[in-house]
View (cartoon, rainbow, N blue to C red):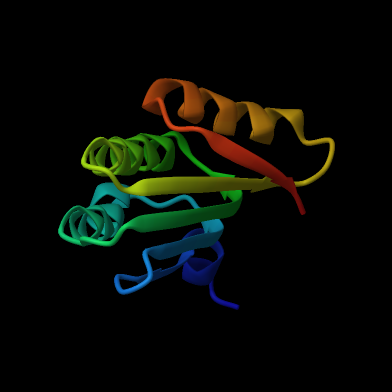
Length: 117
């Protein structure tokens, strides 16, 4: 596995179903360049339901800022009638990771479901 694969998450977004999965590790220098096209795609997608699954093992502050931007777009979609489901995955007992999800939930105004890996 190359170093880039260690720090760039796998992202799968299906604009037909509204399913977005973010998995792996996210720690990169150009985090905005990486996430903004996905945020734009979400913004331009019209589906009745968005299901977001965040399974990040490690992430940096820049990633959290981009996730917040993403949640703001999803909150706007919710205001237009879309159902938004956010699932935050973390290892059982990893309270710091769960607290990061709770902070994002609180700031975004969206309701998260917490799932143990």
